[in-house]
Amino acid sequence: MKRTHVILLSASAVGLGLLLASCSNLTNRLPTPAQNPNEAVPTTSQALALPSDTPLPAASQAATAPAEEAARPSNPGGPGPAVNLTGDPTQGKAIFDQICSACHGPNGTKGIANPGSDDGSVPTLNPIDPTIANANPKIFAQNVDLFVEHGSTPSGPNPTTKMPSFGDSKILTPQQIANVISYVILLNSPAAAVTQSETVEPTVPETAEATSEPARPSNPGGPGQALTLTGDAAQGQAIFSQICSACHGPQGTKGIANPGSNDGSVPTLNPIDPTIANANPKIFAMNVDLFVEHGSTPEGPNPTTKMPSFGDSKILTPQQIADVIAYVISLNPQK
Ligand code: HEC
Ligand code: HEC
Image 1 (spheres, rainbow, N blue to C red):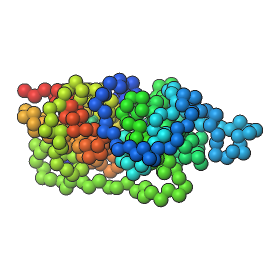
Image 2: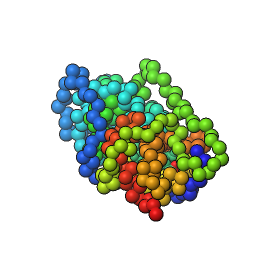
Image 3: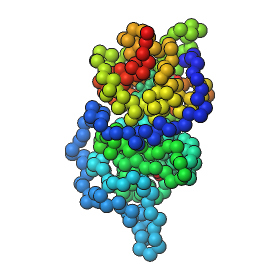
Image 4: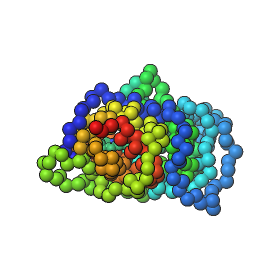
């Protein structure tokens, strides 16, 4: 895409914290994937107890030497309903690529920098902390689940990035959490036969130099169903502050740093690229919709952060996309 953006070198991941702090009044839930009751595993009775005395894989360690305690999130709470569901790692990979990889890196291999935290970066999930991994898949799942359910603030004077809560905040359904957990476990299985090569997203061939061409996402695809619906900007604001502001900043005013991209930072949406804005609200909506539906990889040698797909990936429903588009348009009133 040929565009110019204000480069906000000082943009930090402040917005990411909003994911954690954000309210959970998104009543229009993410789509619930079909659950398969036949595959549900029996309920364990560990709810509420913080299982810090969970046995480690080598049972021999348990008795005498105090076993190293499993890493636990700073936020309180017991295992969520996801631990009783059977996860689908293929579905989980789609969620991981869209959400988790923004902080934990592609396939969990590389956490982004986290200034102000003792660790200095977000932990990798591949390999995962050895106190979280466990030969017993149920214990492994629960160790991961506690972080995903409740979120966690890393130790350190002033961590820029926190682990968001996806369960308590209802950003993900229990089935989606089960799916992503099964993918994280698969990534850390010695026999992981998963192809860990990132699929290179097709890039739209560079068109002519016409600078007035509207910015388009690198991922292909036409306008989505959202454009046939009437968006509610107030609902859209709630979605925006839970999801979009993590990268585009509060009210879209400040994109986070994006090393490896030509722009150097995620674009602001307020103000939005002038080739996306349009006096005709239908065209404006379509220009935004294409990015939200299909996602986009910024130009540059090795962009750290990509625009996730929220439509193709079914993370948001058409109505939720319509709502968030209405909100983005409201941030950029046209004369
Ligand atoms: C906004 C950035 C961000 C996103 C998005 C994110 N995480 Fe995290 N995650 C973190 C941070 C920061 C920590 C460290 C928390 C701490 O040290 O208390 C963390 C910790 C974890 C841990 C514990 C790892 C350890 O070594 O302690 C797991 C497991 C985890 N995340 C899974 C996930 C999954 C699965 C997703 C996607 C559903 C996800 N995270 C999305 C930032 C993020
Ligand atoms: C993980 C980070 C991330 C999240 C979360 C995210 N975006 Fe983006 N967004 C990006 C990046 C990076 C780009 C630049 C893509 C490019 O240059 O091809 C972008 C581009 C866009 C654009 C095109 C802007 C332009 O100037 O080209 C729009 C519109 C947009 N995002 C809307 C949204 C909305 C609405 C949400 C929430 C539903 C959202 N984004 C969530 C990272 C993100």
